[in-house]
Length: 332
Image (cartoon, rainbow, N blue to C red; front, side, top):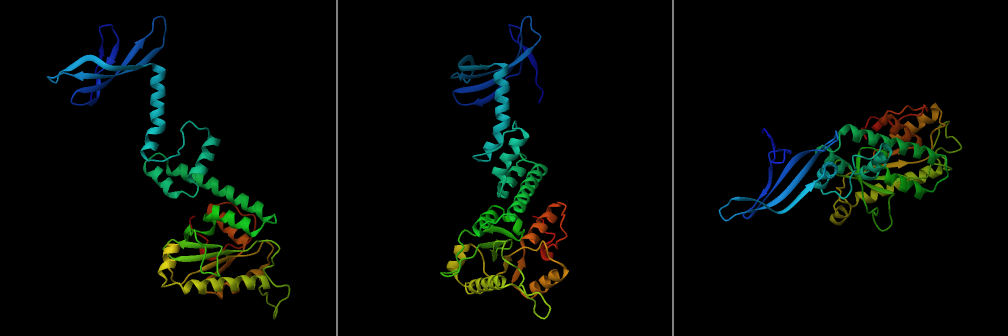
């Protein structure tokens, strides 16, 4: 729609007024004006907003009930305020990112808002507030920093609880098969798993972790010249198999399905145990044989988990450690 620039009796240029609201008794309108200052080269654009009476014959009055004129700086501030806040406010979100944040601050705010909040990120993308490219970049930065933190933790002697907390805050590293950590970890009165996980297809699976250091993966002695699991690993495997058996008993338990929010059919368990950064080819071969002997249990070392995450993110891996082959190209 075309607009005309007019001139008032005082010689002030203005554009055709815009009716903002028209009711039965009042109407409101806005007028943009150009103000030329004497002896100044600058030109200010001001906005006048007024509310006016409508007469009994539906005629508009020029006498305002109320009127406000915003100076140029006020108008600029108002436009910036609307640009910054209008769309985020329509989403109903309590926290969002200001467009004038510097890069470092922007990344930190993205991390706190978007981390583990894919649904919110998708809402921002659909509303064209956040581009897919920006979200992908921030997501990559978050995950790369998590990997660096993971590597630092491996050289420390941390408790199993510390690792449980870290995995809970970085569940993406466990693989894209899982979409949610179930709040209640109880299987029954005697069995409490580290993590009960909802798989992408809605079924219940298990993640069990043991601290990575000071627990040997292989026994100190071979059997018939073959590497065999350490007693600690055998205990962990037995524990996982008991978890699987206990959950299978819940297949038709409606209360358990309501507790977990998941269906129960042939649950799988992933056991994260020990280190493999110093394995030779014979140990790697023995590991593959060991893992292939279980249909519902998969064993991973911390180093394999780390290498898989680096591989998915495209981070160059200095180690020649094997990548866990079953899920080696999953897009986290």
